Length: 417
Ligand SMILES: Cc1ncc(COP(=O)(O)O)c(C=O)c1O
Image 1 (tube, rainbow, N blue to C red):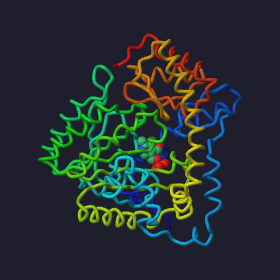
Image 2 (image 1 turned 90 degrees about the vertical axis):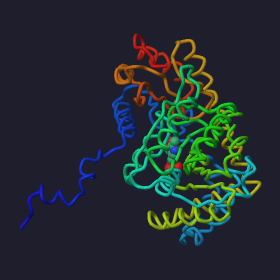
Image 3 (image 1 turned 180 degrees about the vertical axis):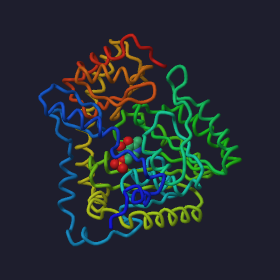
Image 4 (image 1 turned 45 degrees about the vertical axis):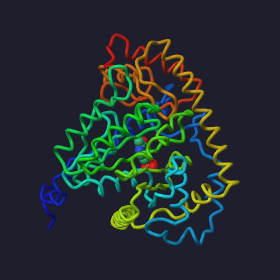
């Protein structure tokens, strides 16, 4: 005898019963694809993958070759749970080498940058505690926190001059320190998603000063989400000059990802590196992260871990992959230049934009802006007080018309900043 469906459906726990089936950005992209297939001229600036000028996914030939050259028997075997040691060391060097911190850092492999963010959230916050990040941030921080019984607290990212809001950061850290026993701050610079913003030297200096002050009273960890760090203009990696001042005080974590670094989104290859001067505490952190890997996915993708290891350590391959990425950077750089020129002409309100996959344009009515843009075949992502534009997916020959549509989309509406 079959059971009534309402009884059956209760097998699903309460918090899981009303989940949306699709990520909202993939839903917007799906609608753009559907209308393009129906014959409309569409500009799809919704999805965060780097596309060539002809609309195909950008792939780095050296990476494809490196993946093809991995010994199949080695790739088919389980990877060590915490990752191949040579891979881990190479990521540490890649991430913390320029800051001179490689000799006080360790690393574990993760399933993409998402896995690295997950491991930081569940190991540096207790259930019921909230991570701190900017009000504009990558949505899955919230999903990961929610899924694991943690939460998200935000501070306004920009001050009234559209610079980084150091005062807001300080205030929020102080307030959060009164409410919970420890703090995890996530900063996604350079090339922040969704705004494209990168902190300058003075801003990083300010962040480090504030963290050192607050840290005296409350244990804290800083997570640098470096998903887009390889796509910034020269100078956007200013953090490397300042972060060394923190490692006596707190673990500095860095989420590294092959998704953008090697344009291998599907590989699900990443790592969480940690720099901290105390070797005993650092080892404890590595063990905790490795344990979480075992409890979530066991081992990571061995094939691409081995390929990434070769790409990072073999000097010839490294040169080639850097050149492949340079070509993609130049392509993106042209789009950024056209956007900045046209957006300034059109008087659009947006934060400083020096490179990266995304930028935002402020509007007090994102839904109305999106409605108008959609009507003209332009697909963007609405966020609080703004719309996000994925220049990574927008060929340079449509950037000008995209800005024109966008400028009609915000006409008569007041920007928030
Ligand atoms: C800000 C940010 N962090 C982390 C990630 C993680 O990406 P992945 O899990 O593909 O490495 C993304 C991907 O879109 C991102 O935008």
